[in-house]
Length: 376
Image 1 (cartoon, rainbow, N blue to C red):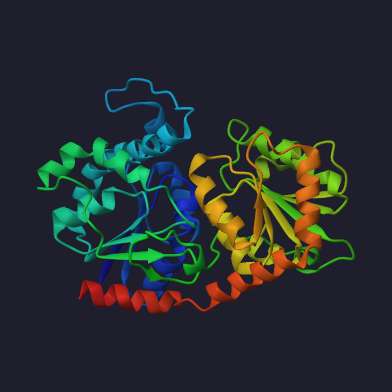
Image 2: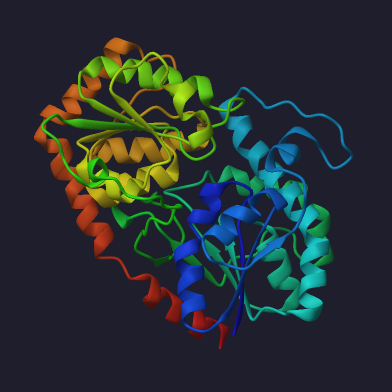
C-alpha cells in the first residue's frame, strides 16, 4: 500500500505525524511525507522519505496573498484564527501542482494530512482515495477551517464542493477528557513523542536533589521569532530557585540564557528529561502540552498564539495546569503560580490522571490497522 503523509511547514507538524508514518513504513507500506523544502531535513532525520512541495516558507504564505500583496497579521484574536486558515489554504494551493505530478507516477492509496494540511483533502478528493485527517496537537481553532474554505473556494468548486469535505477518518491525539463538547467523532491514538534525539548525558535521566523546572517555547525559536519571549520567560522562572533547564534550538540556546547561572540549555530529548522534572513552564504549544500531559506533570501555560488559548483553558479547568495570559506573566505571578503548581498536590494528581488516560488510548499500530482497513 502507498500512504502519503502531508505535514505543515513547521517541525511540530512533522513530529506529530512521525509515529504513524514510521509504523506504516515498518509495516512494509510505501510511505512518503511531503512538506516545504525547508522541512525536508526534519522529515529525513526521522528516517522517512521526503517530498518537497514548494521552496517557500510558511511565513511567506501568512505575509503575502496569492498575488504577492503584503499582508499584516491581525491583532484581534478572532480575526487571527481564520487568517491562519487562509495562510494554510494558500500553502495547499501552492502544493497542488507538485502533488499531482507525484500522483501521476506514485499514486497514493490513502492520504494522511495534518490538521491544517488542506492539500490532503483536495488531493484525496481528486484521486478518489480516502483522506485521513490527523491532529498534530491538543486542538486547533475551528475558525481556521472557515478561513481555508474562503481561500480555497475556487479549488473546491472545481471538485464540486462548496466547503471542505469531511475526512474519512479523524485521528485524535487529545485525550477525551479535554476535547471540546462539539468535537467530531474520532479515532483516538496514544500520543508518542517523536522529536529528534541527541546523545544522552546522565543529568538528563537522573533526578537531582533540587526540584527541576523546564522552560520552552517549542521548536520554532529563532533570533527573529519567539527569542525575546523565551529569554524573558527563562529569566522570570529563574527566580523560583529551582534547577532550570531550557529546551531550545542549539543555535540560540547560549544567547537565550546569557546572564543566568547554573542553567542547562539546548535541544533536549524532552521525552527523557521530562521524567526528571517537577514542572513545565511554556508557550502553551499543543505538542509540548501533550508531551507534558503524557508525562503526568503540572504545567504553567503562557499562550503566545491565540489558537493555544482554548486548549489551555480546558487543561486549566481540568485542574492539571494554570494559565497566565501575555501581560499577566510578571515575575511575581509566574513565581506564585509555579509554586502553587509544585506545592499543591492536586495539580500533580490531575496531571497523572491524564497520563493514565493517554496511556490507555489505542496504540499507533492499532490505528494503522484502521487506516489499512479504510484503504481496503
